[in-house]
Length: 468
Image 1 (cartoon, rainbow, N blue to C red):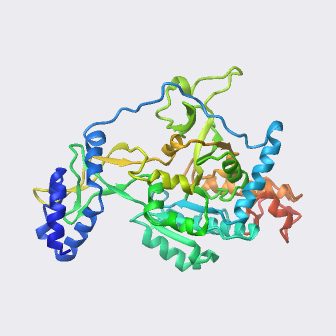
Image 2 (cartoon, one colour; image 1 turned 180 degrees about the horizontal axis):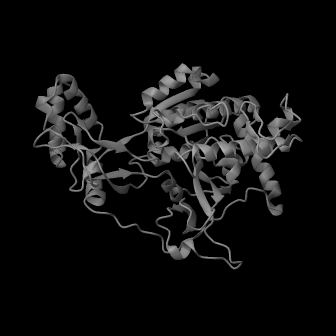
Image 3 (tube, one colour; image 1 turned 90 degrees about the vertical axis):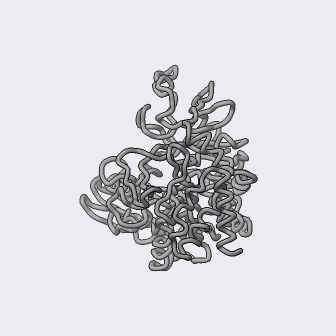
């Protein structure tokens, strides 16, 4: 089809939904820019967007909390006496799935390191205590160790964004994929959605480009399908996906207990939780409503529930979400059969845009636009079965989100060093409290791996910096 015919077709579609202004500058663009604009406009599901404009842009949909909200049940980190056999069975089954090559790793890595003062994809940020290995290297070495441990291939799916896809791919090539086989690493981009004025008009970022924003971490479940990642997993015989975010170097990607418990309980999507440090900690809350697990954001949980105490005087809603999940491949396919199943959320933001009258870029000083996004935890209530497993915060949650203070590189590196010290002490190594230790995932991804490690010191002295 010629660009002229494509233009007429796109114009007709846009006119039907009141968005024909997006072609306002079309005649002023060179042929290459015209083609790019048509490509972008053709990729949108305009009938669905028209519905979202009416329901989420021109108005703010009410946040409908369930009538009944209870604390979510969860499996404790340590097996209670009555569940010891089940925990042992889960570990055994999880290891079987890993050995059989039924598990894939999936990292959401579309962010930039801007908040950290880092010019580049967040996954390239130097994360470890001494050698300053980048986050991507930590994850790659974790996967390599797991492959050696279980004698199987664990393919790694990496979701980037339009802004960091190219530098992320280049970073992996530059570092020879950190020892991984490039055939077992798949990159694909997060989806985007138009940014709208509060009147429901899609905005232009430039005369030849529509303003868009990422469709949220929930969009990762759509991107898995659209990119062909799910088809690739099916070809490989993958059944379970280990989902994590790029900012957490303590992640246990291949936890056999978590994988096995999810599988033997027949769950579609399962989650890890940590005990909240305070009732009002700014994390999502795992809750139970009508027999379904769901996450309620800290800002949406009613204050009386947030502060509610049990019979022993302890907070009832203690299960905090840390964005670690096991997700069934078949469940992702189910979410994408027909129209994508996750609901959209509305946020008012400042979005630069082109003034149609002057063609000049407007830099707003106040929020002027609606961005729509989806949240991955909104898939949980759609499950027939979902479980929550407690993990110890200090063992598996040391995110690098902020330049300083809480959840910063400093606190994460401290947590990495402290965990290494705890693991070493289980083997009899004497470790001074103020020693700084960097334990490579290639050496150990679990405490028991150190039993086979060679060359461990007998002691690590105060102030000593040690790489193992």
